Image 1: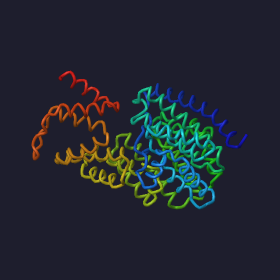
Image 2: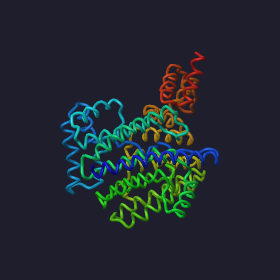
Image 3: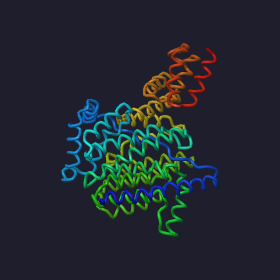
Image 4: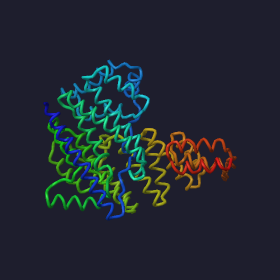
Length: 445
């Protein structure tokens, strides 16, 4: 049996123990403290924007040109193995498969069927299924996600894990396999999460008393250690592991700091270390936001961006836009709409994916309405609605249902057919206020 296979069998047993132990611990904490908030799926997990390479690869996938795909992406792995490409090049190259388009599921299956011994085929399908699982789960905290959605997510994640484990047996340096398994892990055993401050104290107590890391981290740590063995200077798996330690995933800022201190002793460059250090500060901002201290949260986020500098280019897809969005949320709570508008424009300037763009247009609309520019706010809302933002679609539906008066452009005449379209579009996404608005509208008709 190969080293990879032996290690994965050990990890399977650890995973079962970790999930059970984490569930017991979270349940116990919840019973004492009146319930816990779970990690949310945010724009930090967003897919990358379209590029010429992305469009070409997706076109080949849709057309069934699996020979060209296989040659290109196994070739990228071979370039990495020879030292022609580095680990960051490898990560960016495979980002094309982050797009969770359900219509492509059969094409990925066909690629694997055509090339069953291909590392690239199994890895690509595993990555795709991972992002499909995240899409199935949807946004919000886990206690707000319907049980059937969580069950479907776990089912898709199981398939993704099987594909990723299969890929790990097909190359001598499966760096991206380790990275994506760690990412699935953060949605698993500790993906149910507890507030960072509470876990911080618990983590410090356990580490001080037994020098032991809590269940849910052990498997990810093992994957990280294996990744470091195959590439001692790699940045990307260290970054992914750092992200898995965020408070939003049930770990803590303290754990992130411990890991940063460890990374500081490695072969990472000064730029890479700045990027990791900034992530620790981002987590401090998140905890401040959870505590209701918007001013402190904004200060931490801005400090993180200053610390990172140009190293934001190394951050995982969606993190930079996510931090900008967190700053916007902070300024909204502070009623500083000029700054929230400025940061919404910064998000849009990054050429974000559709989800992040929709959120930015929505927040731009909020700022413009608050700054007494209803025409600009309406235009921004319409952009957000086109990009599928459910709460904006619901608000627009109400405007068109009742009609709305603006100071300069006059009146939005009631248009109940258009209102119903907005309500239905938002309701299909599971947005409960839209469901309620749609039901109320149908009763009036």
